[in-house]
Length: 198
Image (cartoon, rainbow, N blue to C red):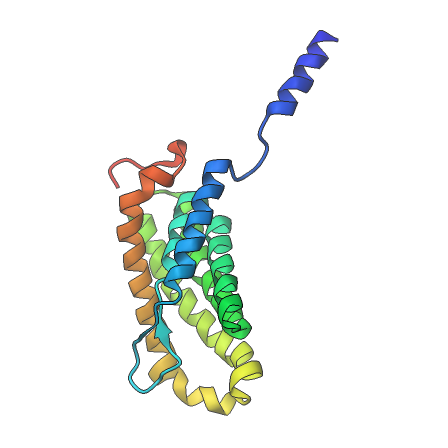
């Protein structure tokens, strides 16, 4: 009986949550930062006013590196929803969620397997390509359904505008992620996952 009581007591106080309190607080802070950064709009392609860069995917990727792909995608998706609710742009939010999924998942998944600087760079390169492919797919599906009305509107812009814009956007976000994650990794990453000397 005493043994059963001890087992029950241990179960009662065992934290089975995948995301602990510190991680959730960090993710909430990154969500707020990402939401604020989403309002920075920098045009990159002359003459294409609807393509503007914002660095909101960087905090999501930092969380993806620190806590795994699920955490990073959650941060990016929540920030996109907040941005959409404030501006009333749910279509843009949906496309940003697609961008978050395509950008965060490859690098965060690869980095979780092997936590080295080289693996992070390889993962980010894969993420830039995946995010560019995802942007093409999103523009040809979500964009055509709710914005352009016809594939013929967006097709002429794919190679001269959509592809180079997303390659530049992804590369800038990747570089920012490397800089910021290097600076904050030991503060936010669980101790068992910290990488020394990278």
